[in-house]
Length: 242
Image (cartoon, rainbow, N blue to C red; front, side, top):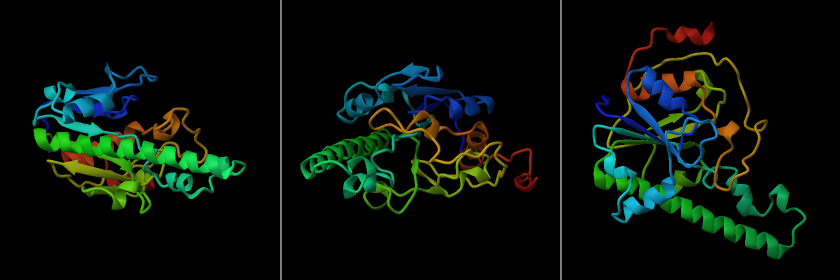
């Protein structure tokens, strides 16, 4: 894929992908409502921007062209596999609650998931209508809500991100809209391995914790080169075993 314009990194306050695009000579900027890493170039409410764009109003999407690329790390907390426990009534935090409290919690969780589902679908519709190239990242599993409840299918599923230098195995799906992935093999041993269970949970509803959502710079670079640019890396796949 050739990117003649800019990369719009949505929901990526860490700046990891943004900085790796820039190192590769491609302009990129981060858009997020949070800025804990002091890397967010444009602090804005992306959910409001998506809703405005879907309704035909003015939004950040008006400045994006088909020569650009959107890289969206859409919040996944209401879609991921762990959310199944929340709807089953056997979540550890619910063990001492009355049945009425459990039912109300599940109903509230259902309403919140519906809101996030509508937002991600609206995001895809905006890109469709405006003919924008977009890649959307989210966890992958058979129990992920989007696996069986979404009109789009992921084009790339990375089952073990540590093979390309990331901290976590964390199987991840990538949806491509108005563009197609390239396929490379830039394997690299991670400098550090982490587990999701050892990471601290999020304190903000609907958001993954900063620690759990971290992606290593090595993985970002290798993903960009392997699945976006089709760029050969200066090292071989044998680096996985060195």
